[in-house]
Length: 125
Image (cartoon, rainbow, N blue to C red; front, side, top):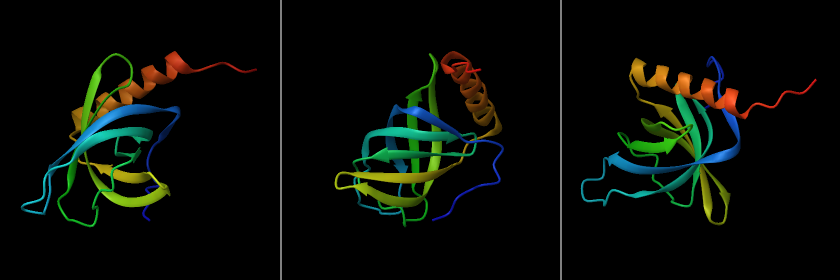
C-alpha cells in the first residue's frame, strides 16, 4: 500500500462524512460505470480515504471517481484516482485515492476543512 506521508496535512474525521461517487472513466470498454455511496474517513487537498460496500477494480489504469459530499454547507465535488484497496470487513472496503484536482479545488478543500475544524473543535485545557 502506498501512503503519502509528506503532505502538508490530512484531516481525519471523528465521524465519517457521507458521500456519493461515480466512476466517470474506466479502462474497461463495456463495463457498466458503477456509482454508489461511501464514507470519507480522511481528507487532504491531495487525496482522501473512503469506505464503501462496493468492490471496485482499482488495478485498472485511468479509473477516475467523481466524489460528491457536503462538509459544511457547500457541496463539494472532487476527482480522484484509486491507488490502493483493503477489505475492512465482510461487506466493506477501504480505498486510498489521490486527487486529480486543480489548484482552485485544492484551495476550496483547504478552506472547507478549516471552517469544518472551527465549527467542530472542542477546546480542552
